Image (cartoon, rainbow, N blue to C red; front, side):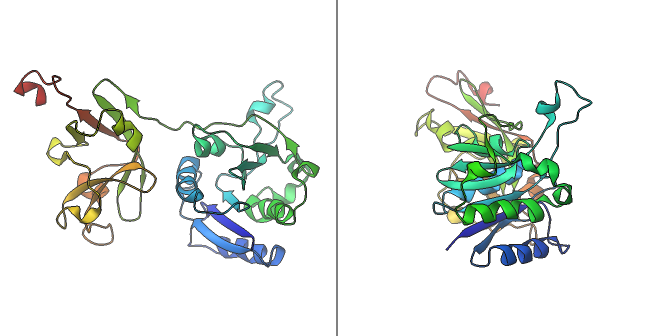
Length: 291
């Protein structure tokens, strides 16, 4: 069975998602549809990349992922001679780990791949002559491309192979001698704070080296990584590595629909810094250096 996933910034307030799914059922009736998220912040390709990459490994080979975030094409403008290719943004098919991603080349690809490279990359330039699709690309273009992929039509017959793609700015942690300076890249529905600091960043300092995780007020510092939320008492702050191995800060049994998530209780917002300071033997000279 062909699996097709949907990721978009359409939200759930309006009819848009239902309209996309209805057309998908008509065009590829045997496909199994799965939603990644439709609550992506409008035009936030970095969040879309995080959401899809976090579960991408769960899907089998041949899965088709449709990413409808900031997907309206930006076509070459004859008035900007010499710069049109840099400004242009076409529908693109990414082949990665033998799965397909249909998206706009708007920076999402670089944010999704991180330090990896695609197996192949194809640009759909025929969109230049399809203005009827420009205002709802996910519905009127991406589904058509998915249909061709599902039917086994050679990608080379309707696209052109390319090697370059745009890379959106995605913050990476700054690694210093005894410190990691990361940032908040996502806040989930529970108010849990997900940072861009990965377990591999911690591992470079060694398993037994003491540390503190700092954000906002020093009174909220955390000095241990727990194996689960329930490793601390209900209502206490906790730090874990989530299933994607990103450092996550949470409140056990906290949620924004209830007593408040970590983001509200700590006043932490997207983009703010989170610091991890390590204290290897000999690095602390006196008590005042800890203050």
